[in-house]
Amino acid sequence: MEPVIGIDLGTTNSEVAFIINGKPEVIKENDYGIVPSCVSLDTSNNIIVGRIAKNQAILYPQNTVLSIKRLMGTNEQIALNGQFYTPQEISAFILRELKERAERAIGQKISKAVITTPAYFTDAQRQATREAGEIAGLTVLRILNEPTAAALVYETGESESQRIMVYDLGGGTFDVSIVRIEDGVVEVLASTGDNHLGGDDFDYEIEKILIDHLKERFSVDITNQPSAMARVKQAAEQAKIELSSAPFAMIQEDFIAKRDSGADVHLSFELSRTEFEMAIDDYLQKTMESVNQALKDAAMLPSALDKIILVGGSTRIPAISEMLEKKFNKVPHQGIDPDLCVAMGAAIQAGREMGIESDTLLLDITPYTFGTSAFGELNGMLCRTLFVPLIKRNSKLPAIKSEAFGTMYDGQEQVEILVYQGEEPNALDNVEIGKFKFKLTPNLPEQSVIILKYELDINGILKIKAVEKDSGKEINGVIQNAFATIEEDRLNLSRSKIEKVWSSSSDQDDYQYGDGYEDDLALNRIGGKEKFESGDSNSGNIAAPSDLEILMNNARESMDKASDEDKNEIINLIEDIQDALAEGDISKAREIGQELEDIIFYIE
Image 1: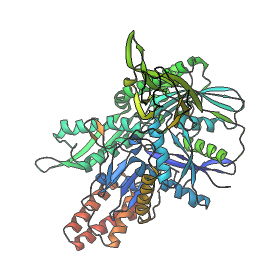
Image 2: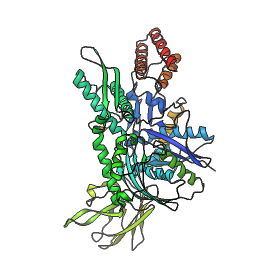
Image 3: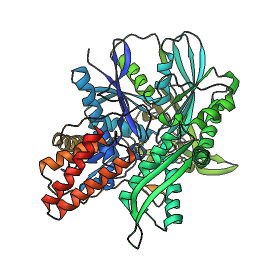
Image 4: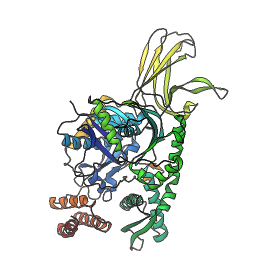
């Protein structure tokens, strides 16, 4: 049978899994199975993905893209070495790496996948995810909600009826779902969440603390120094990880900046878990608002829950378990690795797509209401933009709903059908996700009936059809918003672009991840809005001798094993080598390279 893989395409980390000997297994390559969702350029301007790319973020922050998932479904453009990419194309690099990892493990070519998305992803974001898979050479058989995937894993082997809450907090998104498991049926009762809340935001709170400390202690502002900011971002992430198991984290970054006098500035700051929890408390309370909403939508009291499941690396923060235990008087479960749980669930669904028998029936829902706008009464007044829901939030998928509308006047020539997603009574307060025009039969009388049909499939993809009741004339809706499915010629262009860049890049390996969790570093926020841009690094056009190139790559790979002191020394030596090469002093570069080689020897 043709293999189908399950992929968790995460904000900070991604995983690929496959059914092996009847069980879902995350595919590992001398590592923990986790691939950082990071895309970068090496010094030869080749695309690199994963652990090596993340290690380069400190050295070449302007040539590194992280947390791209937060831009899915937007028109943002990302520049790498003068070439612009869409979020779908950057995500395709990550998916391509996961696809090839699976092919090496399985020993077969792979062209089909199940990919997970947050339950609260919009139609545009789901479309963008599907497009990323297609650009990467994958037919996406199913878009599966992340909490639903996690529930599938926990359902395996369970015979008792259960009502569970899946609390899914990752690097960039948050979802909460209420799920009923009974007689082999996994039924999602309610889902809600926030597409811009996660570990990246927690990192950012620590970054602000460190930036303020440097300003107050040394009168130094590093916000316009990309390399220093990249180091602070990584230090913030590491501190967050340490605080999950220790009451204090010591943050030290030597030679982080220079004063106006030229004196070196060394960052040394002790952060307590209490300070960290206070800094992120507003975010945690926002998650509880979603929890309460999900319970309300499911018409369920907290006491009715049998189990709380924690999913996503950020749930390792102790304050989250404590907060949930206090509210529900139940200890949350982390029996299955929260970093790998979603990918395993995707593999279970992928197994079904392959024809592997399963006793479980999956019933999912839509977290959003989909409707249109029409002339009607709102708050006692006539309104041209009354929101008319067709498929309501928490409807079972697939869902089909039709509604009748009338023309406004005699001889009306056409109607413009606007497609909205949201819950507000005024359509203008919701999100317009598309529109299309329907040319009517000439000379129709006023109040001629137009039937509008919405069909939402199990992947959360919306199809629309409008029909003139009397004539039978119809139009199938193609959502014409900028974020919808790209045309085939543009899709082929993206495939060709990715293929050309990918095939010219060197083979890559991922390296030891460790037993903790990591959320990648958020990019610089420009005017309160995240923006992903990259330019050429200072070393981008410098041709390093092959021996030095290999040495620097080995050094970057060894950074995972290095102490903080050695890591800083590696960074400084690589920068010194590049400076020497920029000055044309090969002898000096080799001399510094010897020092770098000595450090690597002792680390390994």
